[in-house]
Image (cartoon, rainbow, N blue to C red):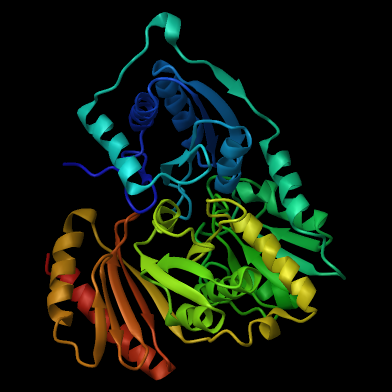
Length: 452
Protein backbone atom coordinates (compact mmCIF):
# COMPACT_ATOMS: atom_id res chain seq x y z
CA UNK A 1 0.00 0.00 0.00
CA UNK A 2 1.31 3.44 -0.88
CA UNK A 3 2.41 5.56 2.08
CA UNK A 4 1.41 9.20 1.77
CA UNK A 5 2.27 10.69 5.17
CA UNK A 6 5.87 10.70 6.35
CA UNK A 7 7.78 12.17 9.28
CA UNK A 8 6.07 15.55 8.96
CA UNK A 9 2.88 15.43 6.90
CA UNK A 10 3.10 14.80 3.16
CA UNK A 11 6.20 16.05 1.38
CA UNK A 12 7.87 15.67 -2.02
CA UNK A 13 8.39 17.28 -5.41
CA UNK A 14 5.56 18.46 -7.66
CA UNK A 15 5.12 15.00 -9.17
CA UNK A 16 4.28 13.72 -5.67
CA UNK A 17 2.73 16.76 -3.98
CA UNK A 18 0.59 17.59 -6.98
CA UNK A 19 -2.63 19.62 -7.40
CA UNK A 20 -4.49 16.29 -7.65
CA UNK A 21 -3.08 15.22 -4.30
CA UNK A 22 -4.02 18.54 -2.71
CA UNK A 23 -7.57 18.18 -4.06
CA UNK A 24 -7.78 14.67 -2.61
CA UNK A 25 -6.49 15.83 0.77
CA UNK A 26 -9.13 18.55 0.87
CA UNK A 27 -11.85 16.00 0.15
CA UNK A 28 -10.42 13.65 2.80
CA UNK A 29 -10.25 16.35 5.48
CA UNK A 30 -13.82 17.43 4.71
CA UNK A 31 -15.07 13.82 4.81
CA UNK A 32 -13.27 13.14 8.11
CA UNK A 33 -15.01 16.20 9.61
CA UNK A 34 -18.45 14.96 8.58
CA UNK A 35 -18.59 17.44 5.67
CA UNK A 36 -18.93 20.55 7.77
CA UNK A 37 -16.82 23.08 9.65
CA UNK A 38 -14.32 25.85 8.91
CA UNK A 39 -10.80 24.98 7.76
CA UNK A 40 -7.87 27.40 7.53
CA UNK A 41 -5.35 27.27 4.70
CA UNK A 42 -1.95 28.93 4.87
CA UNK A 43 1.04 28.61 2.57
CA UNK A 44 4.69 29.50 2.11
CA UNK A 45 6.23 31.26 -0.90
CA UNK A 46 7.21 28.23 -3.00
CA UNK A 47 6.27 28.55 -6.65
CA UNK A 48 3.82 25.63 -6.44
CA UNK A 49 2.06 26.89 -3.30
CA UNK A 50 -0.65 29.06 -4.96
CA UNK A 51 -1.64 26.17 -7.27
CA UNK A 52 -1.80 23.71 -4.36
CA UNK A 53 -3.74 26.23 -2.26
CA UNK A 54 -6.48 26.50 -4.87
CA UNK A 55 -6.69 22.73 -5.38
CA UNK A 56 -6.86 22.11 -1.63
CA UNK A 57 -9.57 24.74 -1.21
CA UNK A 58 -11.56 23.16 -4.04
CA UNK A 59 -11.47 19.77 -2.32
CA UNK A 60 -12.55 21.23 1.02
CA UNK A 61 -15.43 23.18 -0.53
CA UNK A 62 -16.55 20.24 -2.66
CA UNK A 63 -16.72 18.34 0.62
CA UNK A 64 -18.97 20.98 2.19
CA UNK A 65 -16.47 22.93 4.34
CA UNK A 66 -15.96 26.67 4.71
CA UNK A 67 -12.41 27.63 3.73
CA UNK A 68 -10.66 30.47 5.57
CA UNK A 69 -7.65 31.67 3.58
CA UNK A 70 -4.84 33.03 5.78
CA UNK A 71 -2.55 33.63 2.81
CA UNK A 72 1.24 33.77 3.06
CA UNK A 73 2.00 32.82 6.69
CA UNK A 74 4.58 30.87 8.72
CA UNK A 75 3.51 27.45 9.97
CA UNK A 76 3.31 28.58 13.63
CA UNK A 77 1.06 31.47 12.61
CA UNK A 78 -1.27 29.04 10.81
CA UNK A 79 -1.49 26.87 13.94
CA UNK A 80 -2.04 29.92 16.16
CA UNK A 81 -4.69 31.29 13.80
CA UNK A 82 -6.69 28.05 13.82
CA UNK A 83 -6.92 28.19 17.62
CA UNK A 84 -7.37 31.97 17.81
CA UNK A 85 -10.27 31.96 15.33
CA UNK A 86 -11.88 28.82 16.81
CA UNK A 87 -11.74 26.94 13.52
CA UNK A 88 -12.16 23.20 13.13
CA UNK A 89 -8.81 22.43 11.48
CA UNK A 90 -6.03 23.94 9.38
CA UNK A 91 -3.70 22.89 6.58
CA UNK A 92 -0.33 24.49 5.90
CA UNK A 93 1.25 24.19 2.45
CA UNK A 94 5.02 24.22 2.89
CA UNK A 95 8.12 22.23 2.04
CA UNK A 96 9.70 23.45 5.30
CA UNK A 97 13.47 22.93 5.09
CA UNK A 98 13.33 20.96 1.81
CA UNK A 99 14.71 22.44 -1.44
CA UNK A 100 12.52 24.80 -3.54
CA UNK A 101 11.50 22.00 -5.92
CA UNK A 102 9.60 20.31 -3.05
CA UNK A 103 6.41 21.20 -1.26
CA UNK A 104 4.24 19.65 1.42
CA UNK A 105 0.88 19.47 3.19
CA UNK A 106 0.45 19.26 6.94
CA UNK A 107 -2.78 19.25 8.97
CA UNK A 108 -3.56 20.85 12.33
CA UNK A 109 -6.41 20.27 14.77
CA UNK A 110 -8.73 22.92 16.23
CA UNK A 111 -6.34 23.46 19.16
CA UNK A 112 -3.39 24.07 16.82
CA UNK A 113 -1.77 20.66 17.26
CA UNK A 114 -0.30 18.82 14.30
CA UNK A 115 -2.24 15.67 13.40
CA UNK A 116 -1.02 12.49 15.07
CA UNK A 117 -0.10 9.38 13.09
CA UNK A 118 -3.49 7.83 13.76
CA UNK A 119 -5.31 10.98 12.61
CA UNK A 120 -3.20 11.04 9.44
CA UNK A 121 -3.96 7.35 8.90
CA UNK A 122 -7.68 8.16 8.70
CA UNK A 123 -6.98 10.69 5.94
CA UNK A 124 -4.62 8.30 4.18
CA UNK A 125 -7.21 5.54 4.03
CA UNK A 126 -9.82 7.94 2.64
CA UNK A 127 -7.36 9.10 -0.02
CA UNK A 128 -6.11 5.66 -1.02
CA UNK A 129 -9.65 4.24 -1.18
CA UNK A 130 -11.06 7.45 -2.66
CA UNK A 131 -14.00 7.06 -0.30
CA UNK A 132 -15.01 10.72 -0.21
CA UNK A 133 -18.42 12.24 0.28
CA UNK A 134 -19.05 15.06 -2.18
CA UNK A 135 -21.78 17.62 -1.55
CA UNK A 136 -24.60 18.57 -3.88
CA UNK A 137 -24.71 22.03 -5.45
CA UNK A 138 -26.75 23.49 -2.59
CA UNK A 139 -24.38 22.19 0.13
CA UNK A 140 -21.04 23.24 -1.35
CA UNK A 141 -18.68 25.08 0.97
CA UNK A 142 -17.61 28.72 0.75
CA UNK A 143 -14.37 30.70 1.00
CA UNK A 144 -13.41 33.67 3.16
CA UNK A 145 -10.16 35.56 3.77
CA UNK A 146 -8.54 36.64 7.04
CA UNK A 147 -5.91 39.33 6.61
CA UNK A 148 -5.18 39.98 10.29
CA UNK A 149 -3.80 36.66 11.53
CA UNK A 150 -0.13 37.78 11.43
CA UNK A 151 -0.95 40.98 13.33
CA UNK A 152 -2.92 39.03 15.95
CA UNK A 153 0.00 36.62 16.34
CA UNK A 154 2.48 39.47 16.84
CA UNK A 155 0.28 41.23 19.38
CA UNK A 156 -0.32 38.03 21.35
CA UNK A 157 3.42 37.25 21.53
CA UNK A 158 4.08 40.80 22.72
CA UNK A 159 1.47 40.39 25.47
CA UNK A 160 3.33 37.29 26.67
CA UNK A 161 6.98 38.37 26.37
CA UNK A 162 8.08 41.65 27.91
CA UNK A 163 10.33 44.09 26.04
CA UNK A 164 14.05 43.57 26.49
CA UNK A 165 16.12 45.63 28.89
CA UNK A 166 19.07 47.48 27.41
CA UNK A 167 20.07 47.35 23.78
CA UNK A 168 20.46 44.02 21.97
CA UNK A 169 21.53 43.77 18.36
CA UNK A 170 20.10 40.69 16.65
CA UNK A 171 21.04 39.49 13.15
CA UNK A 172 18.23 37.48 11.55
CA UNK A 173 18.53 35.21 8.50
CA UNK A 174 14.99 34.52 7.25
CA UNK A 175 16.01 32.19 4.37
CA UNK A 176 13.79 34.23 2.00
CA UNK A 177 10.91 32.51 3.78
CA UNK A 178 7.62 33.69 5.23
CA UNK A 179 9.23 34.41 8.61
CA UNK A 180 10.62 37.52 6.89
CA UNK A 181 7.29 39.23 7.53
CA UNK A 182 7.17 38.35 11.22
CA UNK A 183 10.42 37.70 13.14
CA UNK A 184 12.27 40.97 12.38
CA UNK A 185 9.16 42.98 13.24
CA UNK A 186 8.59 41.13 16.51
CA UNK A 187 12.19 41.57 17.63
CA UNK A 188 12.01 45.26 16.79
CA UNK A 189 8.82 45.61 18.86
CA UNK A 190 10.65 43.90 21.73
CA UNK A 191 13.22 46.70 21.67
CA UNK A 192 16.03 45.05 19.70
CA UNK A 193 18.12 46.53 16.95
CA UNK A 194 17.58 44.12 14.04
CA UNK A 195 19.71 43.46 10.97
CA UNK A 196 17.83 41.13 8.61
CA UNK A 197 19.32 39.25 5.68
CA UNK A 198 17.59 37.03 3.11
CA UNK A 199 14.42 38.79 4.20
CA UNK A 200 12.75 39.32 0.83
CA UNK A 201 10.16 36.57 0.46
CA UNK A 202 11.14 34.44 -2.54
CA UNK A 203 10.16 30.80 -3.00
CA UNK A 204 13.25 30.05 -5.09
CA UNK A 205 15.41 30.77 -1.97
CA UNK A 206 18.18 32.70 -3.71
CA UNK A 207 20.01 33.51 -0.46
CA UNK A 208 20.69 30.02 0.85
CA UNK A 209 19.24 26.55 1.25
CA UNK A 210 16.16 26.64 3.51
CA UNK A 211 17.64 24.16 6.01
CA UNK A 212 19.37 26.23 8.76
CA UNK A 213 22.54 24.20 9.33
CA UNK A 214 26.06 25.35 10.09
CA UNK A 215 26.95 24.72 6.45
CA UNK A 216 24.16 26.96 5.13
CA UNK A 217 24.57 29.78 7.67
CA UNK A 218 28.15 30.78 6.77
CA UNK A 219 27.05 34.32 5.89
CA UNK A 220 25.27 34.76 9.24
CA UNK A 221 28.24 33.28 11.12
CA UNK A 222 30.48 35.89 9.48
CA UNK A 223 28.02 38.74 9.87
CA UNK A 224 27.32 38.47 13.63
CA UNK A 225 30.86 39.30 14.87
CA UNK A 226 31.42 41.71 11.97
CA UNK A 227 28.40 43.77 13.07
CA UNK A 228 29.15 43.34 16.76
CA UNK A 229 25.71 41.74 17.11
CA UNK A 230 24.74 39.93 20.30
CA UNK A 231 23.04 37.01 18.58
CA UNK A 232 22.26 35.48 15.23
CA UNK A 233 18.89 33.81 14.55
CA UNK A 234 17.91 31.75 11.51
CA UNK A 235 14.76 30.03 10.28
CA UNK A 236 13.76 27.61 7.55
CA UNK A 237 11.22 28.56 4.87
CA UNK A 238 8.15 28.32 7.15
CA UNK A 239 9.79 29.49 10.42
CA UNK A 240 8.89 26.53 12.59
CA UNK A 241 12.65 25.91 12.99
CA UNK A 242 15.17 27.97 14.96
CA UNK A 243 18.95 27.92 14.62
CA UNK A 244 21.27 30.17 16.63
CA UNK A 245 24.71 31.78 16.20
CA UNK A 246 26.49 33.15 19.29
CA UNK A 247 28.19 36.53 19.52
CA UNK A 248 31.49 35.05 18.33
CA UNK A 249 29.93 33.76 15.11
CA UNK A 250 29.78 30.13 16.25
CA UNK A 251 26.87 27.86 15.39
CA UNK A 252 25.17 26.61 18.56
CA UNK A 253 24.52 22.90 18.11
CA UNK A 254 20.83 22.03 18.09
CA UNK A 255 21.01 19.75 21.11
CA UNK A 256 22.75 22.41 23.17
CA UNK A 257 20.00 24.88 22.34
CA UNK A 258 17.33 22.31 23.22
CA UNK A 259 19.08 21.59 26.52
CA UNK A 260 19.00 25.31 27.29
CA UNK A 261 15.24 25.42 26.71
CA UNK A 262 14.90 22.33 28.93
CA UNK A 263 16.72 24.24 31.65
CA UNK A 264 14.67 27.45 31.45
CA UNK A 265 11.32 25.67 31.30
CA UNK A 266 12.19 23.38 34.21
CA UNK A 267 13.29 26.43 36.20
CA UNK A 268 9.90 27.96 35.43
CA UNK A 269 7.87 24.82 36.26
CA UNK A 270 10.05 23.19 38.94
CA UNK A 271 9.77 19.72 37.38
CA UNK A 272 8.06 18.01 34.49
CA UNK A 273 8.01 15.67 31.54
CA UNK A 274 10.28 16.44 28.58
CA UNK A 275 9.62 14.66 25.27
CA UNK A 276 12.34 14.68 22.63
CA UNK A 277 13.40 12.57 19.66
CA UNK A 278 15.63 9.60 19.00
CA UNK A 279 18.36 11.75 17.44
CA UNK A 280 19.04 14.01 20.43
CA UNK A 281 22.04 14.09 22.74
CA UNK A 282 22.42 12.66 26.27
CA UNK A 283 23.25 16.23 27.32
CA UNK A 284 19.49 16.86 27.35
CA UNK A 285 19.08 14.09 29.93
CA UNK A 286 21.96 15.51 32.00
CA UNK A 287 20.45 18.99 32.10
CA UNK A 288 16.95 17.67 32.81
CA UNK A 289 18.13 15.51 35.70
CA UNK A 290 19.99 18.50 37.17
CA UNK A 291 16.76 20.54 37.18
CA UNK A 292 14.20 17.89 38.16
CA UNK A 293 12.93 16.84 34.76
CA UNK A 294 12.19 13.47 33.16
CA UNK A 295 13.14 12.80 29.54
CA UNK A 296 11.32 10.50 27.11
CA UNK A 297 12.26 9.89 23.48
CA UNK A 298 10.14 9.16 20.44
CA UNK A 299 10.33 9.13 16.63
CA UNK A 300 11.32 12.22 14.68
CA UNK A 301 8.44 14.53 13.87
CA UNK A 302 6.19 12.91 16.48
CA UNK A 303 6.90 14.71 19.77
CA UNK A 304 3.48 16.40 19.52
CA UNK A 305 1.84 12.99 19.96
CA UNK A 306 2.87 13.13 23.63
CA UNK A 307 0.31 15.92 24.05
CA UNK A 308 -2.52 13.38 23.74
CA UNK A 309 -1.01 10.58 25.86
CA UNK A 310 -0.12 10.44 29.53
CA UNK A 311 0.96 13.34 31.71
CA UNK A 312 1.05 16.64 29.84
CA UNK A 313 4.67 17.51 29.00
CA UNK A 314 6.08 20.98 29.62
CA UNK A 315 8.26 20.79 26.53
CA UNK A 316 8.30 18.77 23.33
CA UNK A 317 11.39 19.30 21.23
CA UNK A 318 13.59 18.00 18.46
CA UNK A 319 16.52 19.62 16.66
CA UNK A 320 15.49 23.08 15.44
CA UNK A 321 11.85 22.63 16.61
CA UNK A 322 10.51 23.64 20.02
CA UNK A 323 6.96 23.20 21.35
CA UNK A 324 6.50 25.34 24.47
CA UNK A 325 3.27 23.77 25.64
CA UNK A 326 2.09 26.78 27.67
CA UNK A 327 2.32 28.91 24.53
CA UNK A 328 0.76 26.39 22.17
CA UNK A 329 0.93 22.78 20.96
CA UNK A 330 2.82 23.65 17.78
CA UNK A 331 6.51 23.96 16.89
CA UNK A 332 7.35 27.66 16.82
CA UNK A 333 10.74 29.03 15.80
CA UNK A 334 9.51 32.64 16.03
CA UNK A 335 8.22 32.47 19.60
CA UNK A 336 11.30 30.48 20.67
CA UNK A 337 13.54 33.20 19.19
CA UNK A 338 11.71 35.85 21.22
CA UNK A 339 12.03 33.75 24.40
CA UNK A 340 15.76 33.33 23.80
CA UNK A 341 16.26 37.05 23.25
CA UNK A 342 14.35 37.81 26.44
CA UNK A 343 16.53 35.39 28.44
CA UNK A 344 19.67 36.93 26.97
CA UNK A 345 18.44 40.35 28.05
CA UNK A 346 17.72 39.17 31.59
CA UNK A 347 21.12 37.49 31.91
CA UNK A 348 22.98 40.67 30.87
CA UNK A 349 25.70 38.41 29.49
CA UNK A 350 26.73 37.17 26.05
CA UNK A 351 25.18 33.93 24.81
CA UNK A 352 28.47 32.02 25.14
CA UNK A 353 28.40 32.80 28.90
CA UNK A 354 24.68 32.04 29.22
CA UNK A 355 25.28 28.57 27.75
CA UNK A 356 28.45 27.84 29.73
CA UNK A 357 26.75 25.27 32.01
CA UNK A 358 25.23 23.35 29.07
CA UNK A 359 27.54 20.48 27.94
CA UNK A 360 29.04 20.95 24.49
CA UNK A 361 29.97 17.59 22.98
CA UNK A 362 31.23 17.30 19.39
CA UNK A 363 28.63 15.94 16.99
CA UNK A 364 28.01 15.53 13.28
CA UNK A 365 24.94 15.13 11.06
CA UNK A 366 25.34 13.84 7.51
CA UNK A 367 22.72 13.05 4.85
CA UNK A 368 23.53 10.46 2.17
CA UNK A 369 21.46 10.52 -1.05
CA UNK A 370 19.50 7.26 -1.33
CA UNK A 371 16.46 6.57 -3.56
CA UNK A 372 13.33 5.88 -1.51
CA UNK A 373 12.83 2.46 -3.08
CA UNK A 374 16.13 1.08 -1.72
CA UNK A 375 16.17 2.73 1.72
CA UNK A 376 14.79 -0.29 3.56
CA UNK A 377 17.17 -2.78 1.93
CA UNK A 378 20.16 -0.53 2.65
CA UNK A 379 19.09 -0.20 6.28
CA UNK A 380 18.91 -3.99 6.66
CA UNK A 381 22.54 -4.26 5.56
CA UNK A 382 23.53 -1.50 7.97
CA UNK A 383 21.74 -3.18 10.88
CA UNK A 384 23.40 -6.52 10.15
CA UNK A 385 26.87 -4.95 10.04
CA UNK A 386 26.39 -3.06 13.30
CA UNK A 387 24.90 -6.02 15.17
CA UNK A 388 28.37 -7.10 16.34
CA UNK A 389 29.52 -3.71 17.64
CA UNK A 390 31.32 -3.85 20.98
CA UNK A 391 31.04 -1.58 24.06
CA UNK A 392 27.36 -0.91 23.36
CA UNK A 393 25.20 -0.08 26.38
CA UNK A 394 21.84 -0.35 24.61
CA UNK A 395 20.22 -0.31 21.16
CA UNK A 396 17.11 1.59 20.05
CA UNK A 397 15.24 0.45 16.95
CA UNK A 398 11.90 2.34 17.04
CA UNK A 399 13.14 4.92 14.48
CA UNK A 400 16.11 3.67 12.51
CA UNK A 401 19.01 2.17 14.49
CA UNK A 402 20.70 3.94 17.40
CA UNK A 403 23.67 2.47 19.28
CA UNK A 404 24.42 4.02 22.68
CA UNK A 405 28.01 3.27 23.68
CA UNK A 406 29.30 2.81 27.20
CA UNK A 407 31.53 5.90 26.91
CA UNK A 408 28.51 8.20 26.32
CA UNK A 409 28.83 8.45 22.53
CA UNK A 410 26.09 7.36 20.12
CA UNK A 411 25.37 6.80 16.44
CA UNK A 412 21.96 6.87 14.79
CA UNK A 413 21.25 5.75 11.24
CA UNK A 414 17.76 6.21 9.85
CA UNK A 415 15.98 6.66 6.51
CA UNK A 416 14.67 10.19 6.11
CA UNK A 417 10.90 10.49 6.26
CA UNK A 418 10.85 13.64 4.12
CA UNK A 419 13.63 13.21 1.52
CA UNK A 420 15.39 10.44 -0.47
CA UNK A 421 18.26 10.18 2.01
CA UNK A 422 19.72 8.06 4.78
CA UNK A 423 20.76 10.24 7.69
CA UNK A 424 23.69 9.70 10.06
CA UNK A 425 23.83 11.31 13.49
CA UNK A 426 26.97 10.93 15.61
CA UNK A 427 28.09 12.34 18.95
CA UNK A 428 31.09 11.57 21.14
CA UNK A 429 32.90 13.00 24.14
CA UNK A 430 36.04 13.72 22.09
CA UNK A 431 36.71 14.89 18.55
CA UNK A 432 38.93 11.86 17.92
CA UNK A 433 36.18 9.39 18.85
CA UNK A 434 33.67 11.35 16.78
CA UNK A 435 35.85 11.12 13.67
CA UNK A 436 36.25 7.37 14.19
CA UNK A 437 32.49 6.88 14.37
CA UNK A 438 31.79 9.16 11.39
CA UNK A 439 34.39 7.48 9.18
CA UNK A 440 33.21 3.97 10.05
CA UNK A 441 29.52 4.73 9.55
CA UNK A 442 30.14 6.69 6.34
CA UNK A 443 31.91 3.71 4.77
CA UNK A 444 29.13 1.43 5.96
CA UNK A 445 26.29 3.57 4.55
CA UNK A 446 27.95 4.08 1.17
CA UNK A 447 28.66 0.36 0.88
CA UNK A 448 25.04 -0.52 1.75
CA UNK A 449 23.66 1.93 -0.84
CA UNK A 450 26.02 0.72 -3.58
CA UNK A 451 25.02 -2.90 -2.88
CA UNK A 452 21.44 -2.28 -4.06
